Amino acid sequence: MSGAAQSGGIDFEGLLRQALSPVDPPERLSERLESTLETLTETAFDELDSWEISAMRDPRNWVRPVVAGAVATTAGAGLVVMRARARNRSRKRNQRPSDPLELIERTVRDLAEEARHLLDRD
Amino acid sequence: MDKARLDADFTELYKAHLKDVYSYSYYRVGNHHDAEDLTEQTFLQAYRHFERAQRESDGRPLRPWLIRIAHNLAANHYRDRARRPQTSLEETEPTQPVRTMHTTEDLVEGRDELSRILEGVQQLPDERREALIMRFALGMDNREIARALGKTDGATKVLIHRAIKQLEEIVKTEEAIS
Image (cartoon, rainbow over all chains, first blue to last red; front, side, top):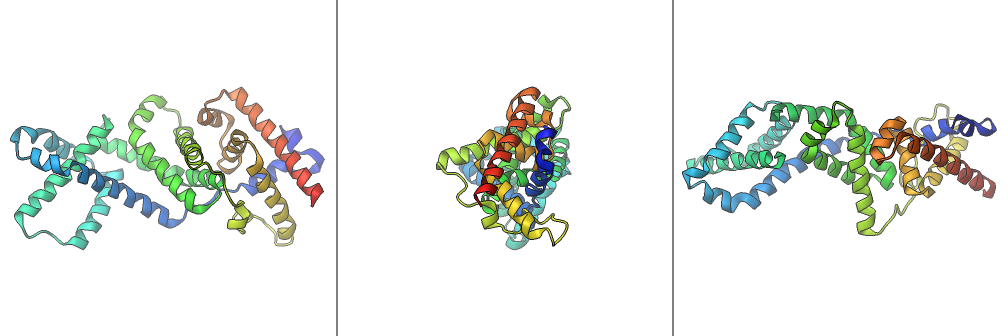
């Protein structure tokens, strides 16, 4: 291979390495990726919303999300942090709910999201 | 493995290889817009299957797996839309491929030469082009490229050798014409 690369006294592989130099990703990409992850979880909630909320009315359905929530609570690193940051940004925009029912609904929503992540992993 | 550990590992993978995936995507699709989409989709796909990949990797680096995801998504992208890169890299990003040039004296001549090489890379058959991107843009060794392309190490070595030979021929022809 090096014979081909050096043919004619030209370091062809060197030129190829220059031509294909690594490209820095734009800074907005990381933010966009985090945002997409956040959107995915929200979309997942929208899909789950109707049955999840109604299912939560039945105490027999409380176990799985509560376990998922407990597991998620112990997860303090990595993407969980990314998601939490994104969620906090979103919450700052929307302010804290004054209505207790709304607060409960949000809590249920978070548990449903985490439950979905755990189920995806299975 | 618990979720916290898994997420922390995925974050490490993301930080370590964002540039690799982006570089691969950029040279594969030929523009920043689609490269961003492809990079994003690659990491989302990777996140979904990360636990299994980590379990099955047996401690081996996951970069080839990550690049393989990008490779498959790029193939789907072209198959679904029945399209190839419509503009050459240097037309869309004139300074990007040559920004590592060391001297301004060489810039004009070097730009021509590097442009011809990039054009030549785009003319290669898909598999040869991808192998060269992995080798030269990402610095992957034969074993990593073999894993990413689902080939043996020997077949990969031959593939890269033939890709370089073909590219040299293309560039020589272009030089002769111009």
